[in-house]
Length: 94
Image (tube, rainbow, N blue to C red; front, side, top):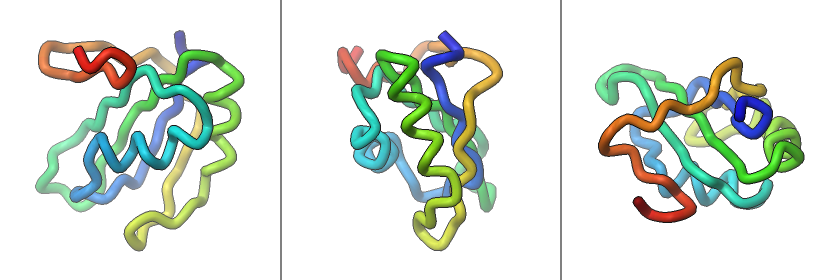
């Protein structure tokens, strides 16, 4: 599953899952998104999982994109998304 997941660093604290989904949906079908880190901190990080590995590779092209005065770092994730209770699956809404 790590071949379908990207890590997104330097995420602004006021970015939410819907905003991330809108950005990464242009790369392909997003299966789920998890934003991590304390929202009171200046920067957080996220994981975006796609349905196909090629979509994740397309998403890497967004590395360096400016979003809310931040330069996003986008790279292949080193581990898959863990789906703890309360995290919504973007594909199913569950």
